[in-house]
Amino acid sequence: MLEIIINALLEEKNLVAHETMQSPGDGSPFEYGRRIGHYAGLDRALAIVNEALSAEEGTEHGNSRHVGKRWVQY
Image 1: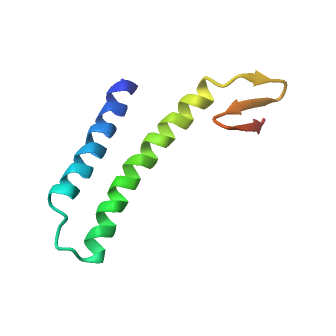
Image 2: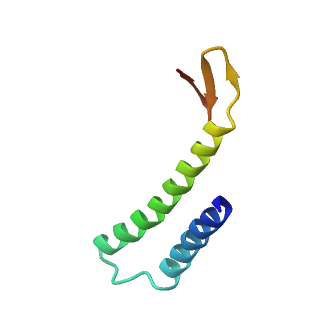
Image 3: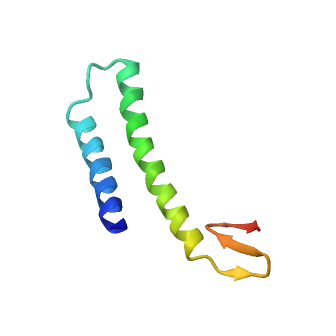
């Protein structure tokens, strides 16, 4: 199930990038910002999924757990 979600996010991100390159819109700063924001939002969603997976697969050491690139105390 998670693989399906990740693939859907990657496909949408790729589609947004291609659509923006093929048809950049009306050229207004608003339209450019909207498209960049959409792309960045998809990128952030993928990062959140990766962080969640890293936390789930983290290695425990005493009272801390390696999550992504940082140590979290619990």
